[in-house]
Image 1 (spheres, rainbow, N blue to C red):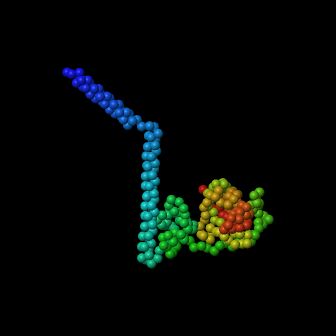
Image 2: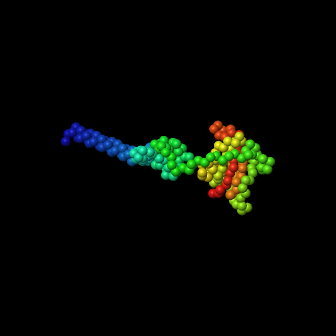
Image 3: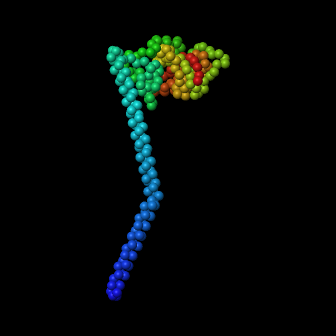
Length: 260
């Protein structure tokens, strides 16, 4: 074999070897890059996946609420149409319409929160007549001492004046500052005008004592179940001049019926 031929063959073999080694190194490098991801990239992908999952849940919740509202609207519309065919649509608070959980006093509680007055509910369902609600009685007449507490009224350090009208039994329970009480009451301004009365509505009222005016919170704790008492509540223990509320000193006759 000629020397030139041998040299050529050796050169070709050397080039092939170099090319193969370069490919192997590139393949190893690619494999390593594929096999190992930086930690920040993994965290980013996980955060994006979590965000996408939360978005799906929010969308599903939104659709469910929309479907629930649509069903309630459809039910009310159906009731309205059916009743309209009979000539009159009625609203009975004892049977809350679709979309409402409970109706009492003068309003209904909406599913999911919020309230609507009877007038609003009637408008929403297209009702033209309210049934099942006791007729209002006349407001009780103001007592003779409505203008100011009499000499025999007892006064507390806060300025609240009270007088027992009907005593309770000696062992009767007294409410605490957060007790839920059921009462009958009537309220007057000092000019003798009645502004609120559970007596005229024909149904007692129930509420927690930490969610009423300060004069009520203090005055009711002086009472026992079965007692009836008159309260003269100065303005600073009443509505404190709030717009739309009865102004000045207020007078209440309260009968404590029960405590929860």
